[in-house]
Length: 330
Image (cartoon, rainbow, N blue to C red; front, side, top):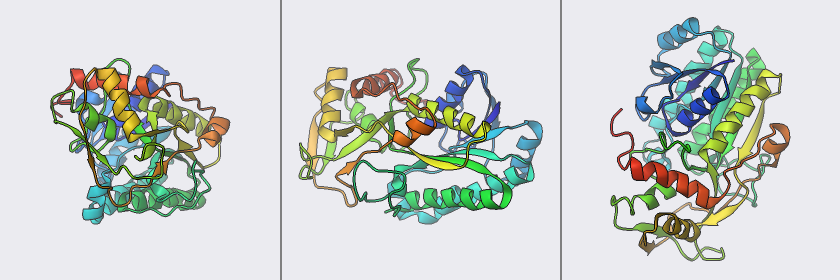
């Protein structure tokens, strides 16, 4: 198959593009490079720089490349920024996706795998979270991702589009080669923030809240290795290519680790004491967010293999210690 990875110069997109190439697929990467990096695009992938909002660019892309399926990563993803600047997120995430679907319908491309998020659930009613659970986002980022899912649904009914929406939990880690990894600016994810301490980028890491109803009082999250996420996207594309119906799947390890456990594991991996400063809770942080991924395992045949927290942090540290400034340039 010839697969278009939109947003393939970003963190999860670049890892997915790399795994697709390793799996023998033909890969085309499109990215605006607003938050992605040209150096993250793997060798062997065709690359086009352009924006989702540019219909002429999309038409040129679909006319030049005979695309069989699309994997859609192109979205802004900072929760805090989405609260302070919601219209930026509605414009980029929702309106940009509308342009992409317009072009796909016009060019007869009927398969898309979508990078969604656990933020579509909001505060969980129970743990582990099931795909059938209530969706009530607590921020515009989650709200736009949920609206994008509904856009795929209605486009499917009207135009025959089939989609898979993958709701991930906490993506982390890096490819075993150490050549690509996580490089956000600003950084908001826990593991890269922790690893900034042994890298000399910050003096300590903050623990937001130590009085949650959890064994050690800190928040518990489900961490999933980015390479396992990439494999799920490949399985989802193949599921659609084999005629699978539109569906939604959670992706996580089903194992929760507390903030203290993550910090302690990072200390073990790096050999650095990593000072931690206890601070008050942040508004809107649930005590536990853990996924049930049984549906993805059953239907897609997904089997996460990099599920050890120590392995996840070791792979992240291998990237960050050798690339303390990320990709340094676009």
